[in-house]
Image 1 (cartoon, one colour):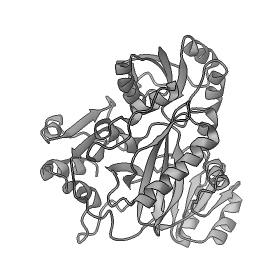
Image 2 (image 1 turned 135 degrees about the vertical axis):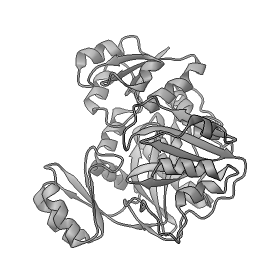
Image 3 (image 1 turned 90 degrees about the vertical axis):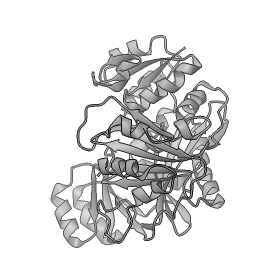
Image 4 (image 1 turned 180 degrees about the vertical axis):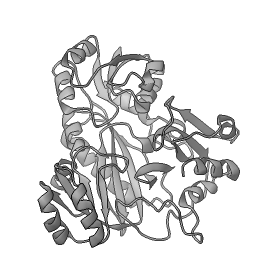
Length: 397
């Protein structure tokens, strides 16, 4: 049985590694001849808009899935006329447009931050006057890892952003003094069976995910139930199949939905070693209609992304219960090159933060001297050698 996957990055790579023990085969389509999956599976190098290549790609496939949400919806719909595509193209379409995404959340009664659409750059000033500052301006489509965003704290920021605005639809969101950022990994099978992983606490720097703590420290049952309720509404509304991730701001004891990803997700990498069944295996089980695996955590984890540069493998692997994953990518600033998952049986995590942070604003890259670095603090209470943790953190600065 051969599964087709649109996109050939590290997420597809890890999907294939999870699928081989199940007897599955994989065929990838990616425009880049350097896509990492070429080392482990058949890779078709072609543009997503090349219908002839898509036609050939689909021949003999059981079904198609995708590993990132910027695959053109037209490609997914083209393939869906020839072979089943999961998650459904409608989920891909909603996730690609922040206004459509917010509209879906509101339609389903899911709380979000306040926002205003901006159809043309000339509407920008009026939207800022109406919503107020501070706020964050984002392109409605595309943009990830902090790209396509303007942080607006003062009138000077507004004036500076104005000449930079592209001629595309934008969305202006109000800042919220959130306590922390959380994400829930949900999975729904073609049969309708659903399951949820424990909430994950995420820390970003420069708009890029740097660290995930799982399960989230000081996690209270009502917050977990609220996250599952939100995810269930989205899953059921779309007759979804596969992994769905929804990111939240925790604010005054409640959750505000920020965005969703209709795919396996960076904040779920810890599940490879830290859960009974990884997100990657459960995604495959779900799209094939197989019984889902247990989503229970098998320890407490800290997942650290390796961005722009890599530590020495030997230093990482010398740490008990540290698991190194390298993606085979050429190093460059801001690029995710791998990750390390650190696991312990019963850590004592500290509170995630001592002061509110503005929604959509990445944490300061250089904390005040009197404040402990939350990335190191989040990991350092685990029973691992502090020297290696400090080294890993330094590689992410």
